[in-house]
Image 1 (tube, helix red, strand yellow):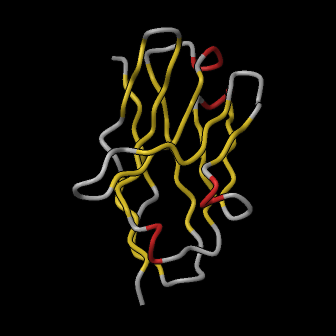
Image 2: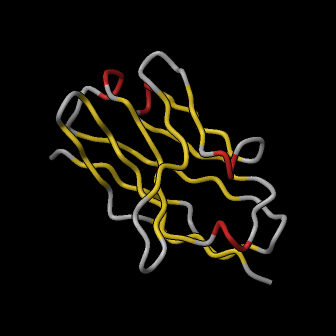
Image 3: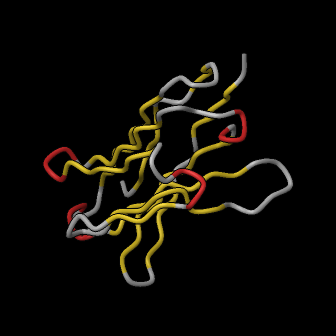
Length: 115
């Protein structure tokens, strides 16, 4: 079955950290461009961070210096380490796997940053 499944979301205080994981199955993971997106009610889903199959990364300006995306091809997993979290980081976070015209989305994991 082709799917990506996110985990690791939760409630955290401002300044705290979380690590999101996304495990892919049914695909040749190492070939895929992997990304993390986030979405809040009433807004469009937006890119947070992405990593190519060669390991090149890019980040939204709002998370640069705080978030780090990485991948472990042996485990078919992509990670998002989120540090110094802010209330404005509160959102549903979605994993995406992309190869040419093929896009695979997970169901998302909720991150809430609140005191």
